[in-house]
View 1 (cartoon, rainbow, N blue to C red):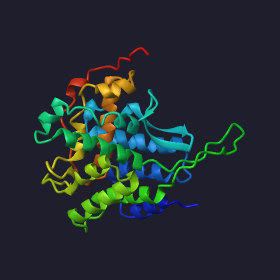
View 2 (cartoon, rainbow, N blue to C red):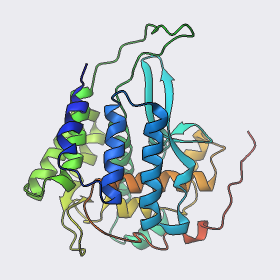
View 3 (cartoon, rainbow, N blue to C red):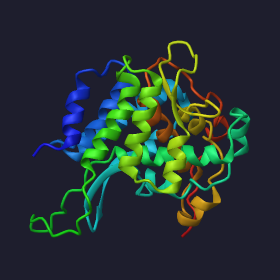
Length: 298
């Protein structure tokens, strides 16, 4: 049976530009959500290859994206695929879930002087929702005999998920739409997918699709007040210490793994923009480049 997100990917594939690193990563991430009949290992290989290619262009030797993979996790409601830290085996969206109340890092404030604490929290919340939106719908988990076991049903979000992915992809693939229309579509799609909680509604109002005036750069997902691009804000946090609220939940998380979460999240946001920007957030986490991961004892 074809799902709404499969149909959305079919529609988008006709207009994608897989010749660019951003386009290849965007296509690979959308294929994870569509799932089709592709083996998990092939999906993982496509995403990690595209991630490393874009990271090489944007971050160079500072990149820690090699610590992230596409992996499965079994829940009472079924098996999901998502971007995960390979060693720690935790979804990037789960890490961001515990980070979105963290204090605005001084390093990020220095790079984005007009950024407020509330905007920092909104960037992390929306980034988490983007990663969740790229996950496929859960599938039943087979037992040892290969039979699908009964699972606790959750309300299907496939239509809302597909529309959210379409609204994200429209940033780079719909030059015919005005930025105000792109903004309205994205805000609506986000809330339809994520639910209209006060935090989500506040974050949605802080979203704007804007032309930032950078050479060879299309419209970007930005903060409506300050105009800072989400990808720029996220990538500028590379090298910042792991927030205490994250370490409370994941005490063994290393600095390199936190950098990997930041890098992959920022590059995922960049994948839904159209442009040839190089060395984004240059120097943002150069201090972490020489750090080796030190695993804390449990």
